[in-house]
Length: 150
Image 1 (spheres, one colour):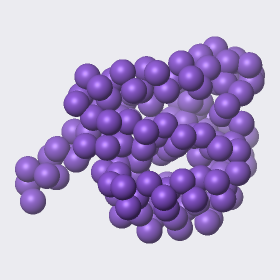
Image 2 (image 1 turned 90 degrees about the vertical axis):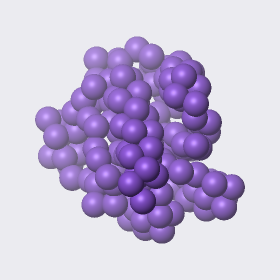
Image 3 (image 1 turned 60 degrees about the vertical axis):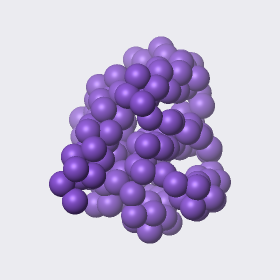
Image 4 (image 1 turned 180 degrees about the vertical axis):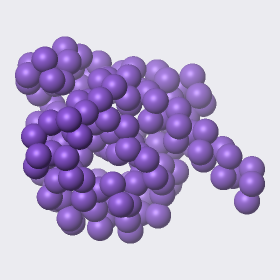
């Protein structure tokens, strides 16, 4: 099983960017925790971060033919206006779990709407870096369940 972890704009600044909202863990630390959990679950994890929507779409379109069973994504600000990212995620055909460090529903009005949510199986928000691990565990369990019931 192969899971993609994708992080969008400005998430490369984690650990420095407003720690009161996003926490103190850096993106490399989150990716290491995610990769370690994936290994415990017998899953390969591929991590990617970009500040540009086109870069993320290019990554998705390049990785899917290599075999990606599912995607955990924190789209960052693309959550609210990334329609081409939304279309690319829908086109992938693999289950998507949208993840946010902060509770986007308790923040500024413009952050409360996700254009990604309609193409995601689930959304995890407000659990900090642990939300990534919950997303991974849920996605792996979902894939195993779907494989055994089909």
